[in-house]
Image (tube, rainbow, N blue to C red; front, top):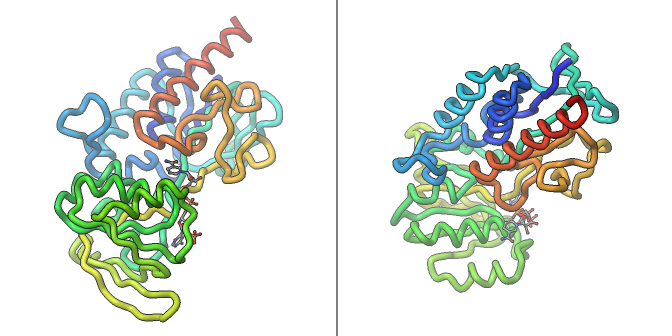
Length: 307
Ligand code: NDP
């Protein structure tokens, strides 16, 4: 029987681990499939406070992990395949192992939705990105592309105009999910060029280890052509990793866990932090902040229950 189990080893989960470990609760962190979360998919992080010269995402995660381990956090690789949050202690199944815990902190994140096209996977972090805030500044005075037609795509395109010489926004339809205000703002920006009814078929050049261009296809005419760009920002939505808790915890229609007082779910003893409950900010520092909140709330609940 554990006091605290944390699902997820990104920024939110590791910060929750640091705080609960320092509170002597010996947390167990289940690392999950995308160990280290989205930070481990990026390169240089320039907006995490305390690093004036930036820090590599994977290194930041490694340091957080060491910090948590130093205070007694334990780590288990693997994925939770079943979770029963209906009664305390909560019961988790990891491969064939069962773990029981008084407190469950869900920090399982949200995974960026990718296009699933040739060249994409191997160029993630090398010009293919799901986060303009993280990677936009690397493409100063270069031509970049954004894929998507929602608010995130508009926001990413607008943000990128601060750095890029030209931003091509490619969307598969001629209608947008984006709100009118965001769409109008993007349309008014002369650096942003819209290419509609068009999909990206391929990203080049994995052999060079960088993005040199894309092949586009008009879905109506079938015409295919190449464009030279230095980066492709995929903004086609995120999928919160909450499916284990469907029917057990309150979530919105897109699967984001609904929290009260920042990190409390509708079940006493279950807290959620980071991107699995945050569709707005999705930053490393906000994930870390909510991980801290979940840990402090967890500690207070245990103290109130057991003294
Ligand atoms: P959305 O689901 O709103 O939009 C996703 C976009 O990606 C759609 O245009 C969709 O096209 C397209 N898409 C999905 N899958 C593919 C694919 N396989 N290939 C090509 N295109 C694809 O996601 P967002 O992340 O933009 O927004 C999520 C939520 O967050 C929304 O509620 C949004 O309003 C909110 N948000 C608000 C912001 C703000 O207010 N400042 C900023 C960012 C997000 P199609 O339309 O054809 O389905």
